[in-house]
Structures are given as structure tokens and as C-alpha cells.
Length: 152
Image (cartoon, rainbow, N blue to C red; front, side, top):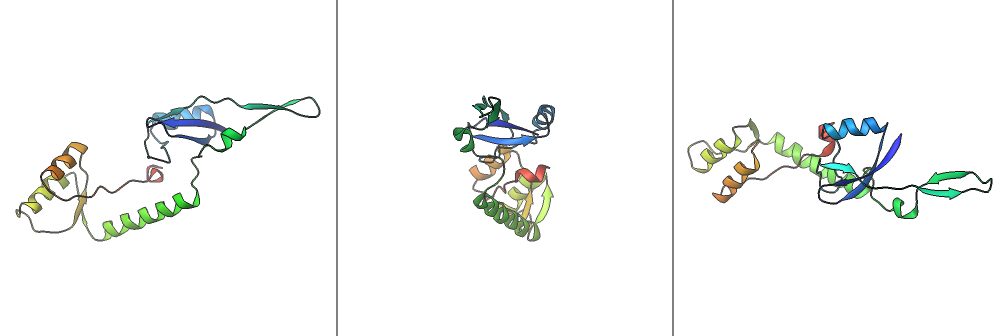
């Protein structure tokens, strides 16, 4: 196992463990690593240097410094775990009480708003541009966040 210091494209730093350097590279290429702060999959290795401490026997050992131990790790603390539970519950309620219309979401949301389709709760996919256009036209939509572990 190897621990890497990582940084996302928004500048958030965190640490995570991997089975090997190649394991990290494979996961990074497939965008399977996400920032625990903003969920960005655009993650790279941060510059890191181990602290080297002497021992009484004169041999050297490698250990984490105090500064490194204050860096957030990809493992979740209790607050983050609770937030993820709430996000999962919200997602579950939305899924139970709406119809999945997939990629037809923007078209159908507009038709419902314009009275051309029966009013009902729907969910689906929209590009950022499609979502902006719906919002600009006064059509109320709610993006539902995807959690990093939903990609694993």
C-alpha cells in the first residue's frame, strides 16, 4: 500500500491509499478518484516529501510529519458520512416519487412547463447547457448530486 497526497483542479488537497503507483494511475485515468470536498474527478498527485526521523539505533525511518497528518484524507469523517447518508436518502425519495425519463428530460420538462404534457414528477439527464436553458426559461429543476462511491 502507498499513500499519495492529491490535489483536485479546485485546489483542495487530500490523501488517499492505493495498492501501488500503477493502481493510482489506472484509477486516475478512469476518473475513479474524486475530491472529498467538491467531488471533482480531476485529481493529480501533489508534491509531497516524507519526514525522515533518526532512531536510537542510528537507523533511519520514514514517518509522516505533523503537517501531513492535518491534511484531509479521502476517508470520510462522521460529518461527511452523515451528509452522504442524507444525500442517499434524498436520492432514494426522488427515485421513488418520480419517473426516470433519461435523456428526454430537457424536452419533457419543457413540455410539462408549457402545458403540452401532463404534469408529473420526472428525473433524467441534462447537459449543463440544457439545464441552464431550462432555468433561464423559468423552468424549475433540481440537480441531484452523485456521490463518488456511486462510480465504484
